[in-house]
Image: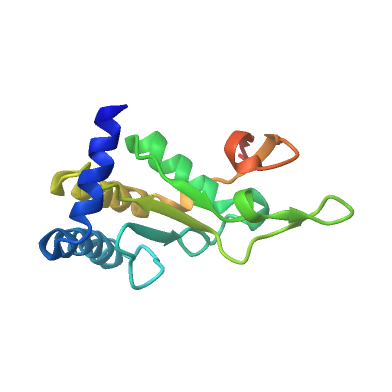
Amino acid sequence: SGRDMEAIAVGLEEVFEPDYLNYRIKSTAYMGEKLREIGVPLIWPPGGHAIYADAKAFYPHIPVEEFPGQALACELYLKAGIRCCEIGSVMFGKKDEEGKLIPAPMELVRLAIPRRVYTQSHIDYVVETFRELEKERDRAHGYRITYEPPFLRHFTARFEPVR
């Protein structure tokens, strides 16, 4: 639509404005610094558009076969409605000939920060949610896949908690 094309055009202009870029990068860095202060393991330095939390380090008690990245993504959503993306063995894991999981090298959760969407209070809300999860991290559990399509399972797989 015309509105969408206009939004794209504005975005293409904004990405070349030094003040805008500085604000965007500093907002992401702010979230990263605050999360590190409370002990959330991150890929460092943060990018200009996203924070990557190391779910395997955050939940060391959850085996990779129970998808710690998916567990963290679920906890963020269930606790506070925060949508994020698992980038780990759900997305990149493979199966060997016997059907055993060959895990991804990392178990990450991507917290993207879209352009012109979140305010400082939104960023602080994410940090406070992680602060709550940090306090109860030992109680978190993994997940098992109950359904997966033959390709691109991370889009439509179904899970159940492992208790």
